[in-house]
Image (cartoon, rainbow, N blue to C red; front, side, top):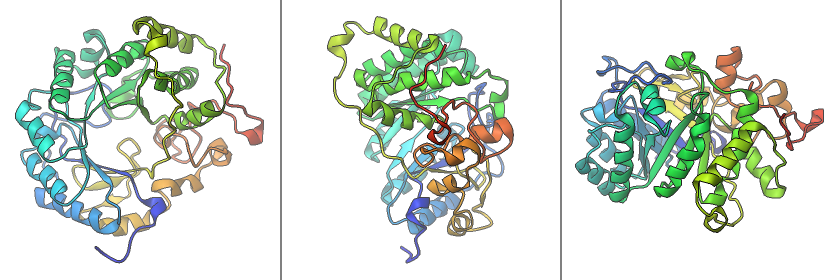
Length: 380
């Protein structure tokens, strides 16, 4: 381990390794233009191992490695890569596409190598939504079968759901399924219109705020909820812990009433305990299939490439763009918001919507207190 360590405030808690762009899906909302076969410029097995070695030498505390794609199951050396991470003491998670490649022998392999979590995408409760989005008939059935198989294998399972106009009213049914399946975490993504997703209709700012308020109350049902590109969720949780929200609005009311109608006897089944507000983690880092480095998979501000420069140098050169340090560069209302260190707005959304990575998050309706704001928002 080297004596020089990158500053703690810039240490990511999650590092995503895009092992391949090969994928047997062509999802309408995908950030990447995945393809049915590997790309010629993908990092070799030795190059990926070298990246893992570098990560271990930069940070004293090993971050969680998330092996993703494309579909990482379509990379021929994926077992070798996962084993290498495990042998070198890294906690790791696995994020495949739902396919027959994720069979029982591979699940046993993940268990033996102490995989922390497997994640699957579930973006609709009906084939008309999920299969449409995935552009693959039968994909919903495959996903539901895998949920059962992963749980039977004794692995922690995370369900990822991307929120968009088409599926917003299906969220209660998805939440109920997640709860009843014994899933460890429900990670809710808010659509960023990039890659293939530029043609998919997102949600309005009013819907965005109302969905986040609704999500903040799901701890009462025993659901562990996290968000991606929805950082205001952390603020809403913090506020909700101190005082109940007085949210009104059609979307919020529909979601709340629908979930109560789906779950029988909600009063007896709700877990009545204080909401646990997660600490603000140190952020993410994304290393693409060809070695390009970005703050996250959706925030495509290129920091460098591990083929031409070591990772330590890339992190040092971009110390103001990684981890929590980026909060110092924010402009507009995100720059003077009292919650900028807990939230900071979606940098990816600011970049793709207005071309300014450090500008205000266009979906956030909160007005900072310096301007007379109040998180007790009412919607017409």
